[in-house]
Length: 163
Image (cartoon, rainbow, N blue to C red; front, side, top):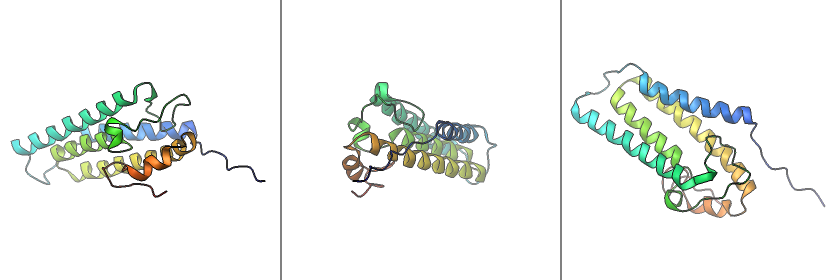
């Protein structure tokens, strides 16, 4: 009889590098020079600020929903619980979704190619974090596969994992 495959673990340094990269791209989105890809009039600023507020709200609601299980690292806490209710009933990574919506608001306000590039880089980092995190969550929680099969990754219904 063969031993089961060892559980996947992301090295803590790699996990924190992803967290750092995520914050670098968020800061860049906030501080890059503004461009002129589109008109930056009042309607554009209102839309951008609304997206920022929505993103912050989603991320805060998701963080509150995790409670003591919350960690910025993609490595799940050993004593954590699998949360599948509230915003986690809509998407598996609502904090990441909120950060992407916030970042999109900053892209709308910034109106530059550099903002678009930083947002795509943020998306790439968050997707990598989500994939690593999901491998570890699947190892830690027997119910994760069924949850991932019915709930989208970042957008409701999109990115479900086939069982």
